[in-house]
Length: 139
Image (cartoon, rainbow, N blue to C red; front, side, top):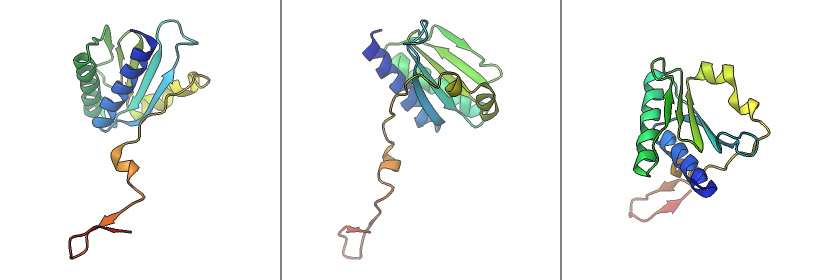
């Protein structure tokens, strides 16, 4: 996997996690300081069911893109599940475990990727109201 492909895969994993309502999604470029992988994708799921749903969706979407996990750890407890795709590693935490391990602080000097804005957040400032005549009215 080239660096560009790894970056795209990390962003795809982040998008898949967001689709399953993962929160506090961060993509950290650890490649310059960590030899074994290029990117960490860090996500929070509110409970074990959501963690499992996020993990399954990430694995499914990356598999559809031609990437297969070479390791999967922590699935039984679902407090911290790790998916290893080689050049990217996805960490899905429940809130208490994420707060305890604080991977973002551990890799605080590593650059973070800008995540695309979600459609709902992008249009938050503008509200469209439809008047009685059917035409749009901006507020």
